Length: 342
Image (cartoon, rainbow, N blue to C red; front, top):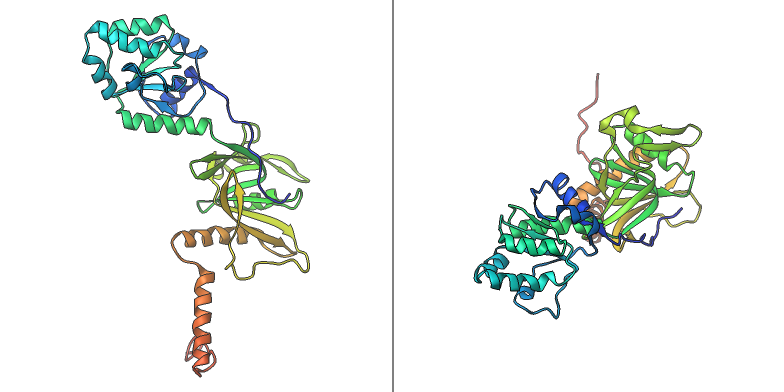
């Protein structure tokens, strides 16, 4: 089917603190020490990707306190608490514990008195400590949460990494998307997903991956299901790739407007991100695989600032200007053939 705007699938509503802590330890490689209430993490949930540093809340200003967010106590907050005696610290800390806080992280190796830990235990609020500095920890944590709560959608096509460029091959059912992807894999390129491609928006880029059901598998009409990993090896697959170009295959039709020069750049909006799209007609004898490789290399050239269509247009304009001044018509590319004798 023709590629076009796809409605996002429902976002995650929440993730558990237990899931967050596990992934921060295993995937993000952040050292986390459980200070209190580690066992309560499975029953506490995060519903927002934003973070909060509760300095004003501890000082008593609670009108705009976003208690539903993850609370970060860095050097500033911990130094503020140290200005008070233990009773003053308890009073300040109780201001944030009165609300249903999902979890508290102590950054930069900071510590708080055991009395404050005991107060958090009463409310079953988990506290974790990390040696990572506050700014770096918040960046890594926010990036993980942004991924978990990101906009996502599913499209029909084949996603392949060609020379490091993520190409999504689309078109109506049965037109040969999987066959083109298989040919690219045989030529040394890498499969990301076939048939069902999951797209996730992170910042202003779109990442593509397979689903947990179809990863590494392809359907070739007339043959059936094959597993790319077993057949072609680890070099032939990858789990994710940034989507950079969409190639839409369609059967050649007389009279349809086709981009002949490449000066007109078409885009398609996916998750509100504009992605370059190439409309590629299929005719007998046309090597779509090689053209897909050329599309990838041409995209690489454009990233380095070279546009072949623009360069040819400038050369043509220069020739037209020379002709207007009475210059001779174009000649051979060389002035003298030295011969080609074997």
